[in-house]
Each structure stands twice: as structure tokens, then as C-alpha cells.
Length: 118
Length: 107
Picture 1 (cartoon, chains in turn red, orange):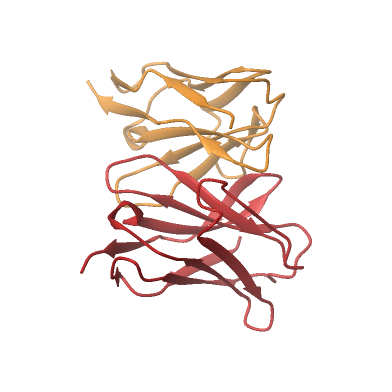
Picture 2 (cartoon, rainbow over the protein chains, first blue to last red):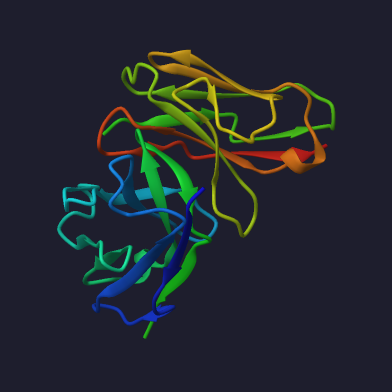
């Protein structure tokens, strides 16, 4: 079973860029078995898939966020990262990283709350 | 986008009850349907993948069925630790989408 851990600032100012990193342990991020994904959940609301990346760098994003999202992978550090630009209060959420196998999130990080506020 | 609609949005049940949650897709997703359980303050936990495959370590009282557009999650005998919110998710398209969730509360 993989362990995933999100890290990054818990407070971001409006119009700035949200940056989070997910560190994977218990396995290699270069495994051909997984994509690596980001999912978010606004307080008291449901889940929204943001996007996913393969170790080769191949990505796919939620079209509703695509213009603002970049997901990247660093195989040397066994990490993958999320950048979300031009954030507003609507981007306040718990952000989760997860391993994705055949489209389902198998292992999840504990989540990190990011608040957008000045 | 494929819209996922769960019903009911919430339900009250007693320990030992049989509970059924329904998920409907706006178009066919064959068997690309997954179920998660989420408890307050915790990450979602995978229960069922590919409509009916039980994730390793998940109790056998959980089961999933369906194909095409209509799917069901069944808890055969509700246990105290099962009170949580349940989400369905389609993985038929690269744009993954979730249902709005079903909250299972204690009666």
C-alpha cells in the first residue's frame, strides 16, 4: 500500500498561485501501474477531480480548471505537484493527492486545507 | 461531461439494516464506476471499483452492482463504523466525475 502526503502553504492570497506537493512512499512514482491525481473538496461540499499525471509527464486535466492548472512530476524525489493560478475564494478547499489505478483512487493522502484569503 | 446523480442525498438507518444507495450516470459508463466512503475529516476510502469488485481489506457486507447507467452500492448489515458519506465516481472518461454524495446517518 502506498503512502501519500500533501505539503504546501495553508493560506494563499487571491490572484496568487496555489502550490502543493505530494510525496509518495512505499513505492515508485515511476511505476507503470499508476497515474497520480489531485482532487479537492470545498468545505462541506463534494469531491472535484482536478487532474492526473503519468510518470512520463502525460497529463489530463478537468476542463473547468485547465487554463489555471499545471501538474508535474519529479521522479528523482518521488513527488508530484499541483499549481493552480489566479486563485479566488472559490478555490478554498481540502486538496487531496491520490494514486490512480484504472481510473479509481486507490491510495489517498490525508488532505491539506488551503484557504484563499487576503 | 458525464453527470453522476446519487439517491438519496441522505438516509437514516439503524445498525443491522440493509442499506442501498443508487448512482445514475447521464450516459453509459459500462462498468467504470467506483464507490468511496468518507468519514468527517478523513480522506475518501475506496470500497468498490469497476462496479462490483471489492477493494482488498473492505468488509464483505459491502457490495456493488450495475452496468451502463444505473449502479447500486449495498451494505448488507449496517455497522456502527459505516455511518459516513458515500460517493460514486465514474472513470469512463478522462474527466472523472463524482456523485454529490449520500450521507448515512444513525436513526
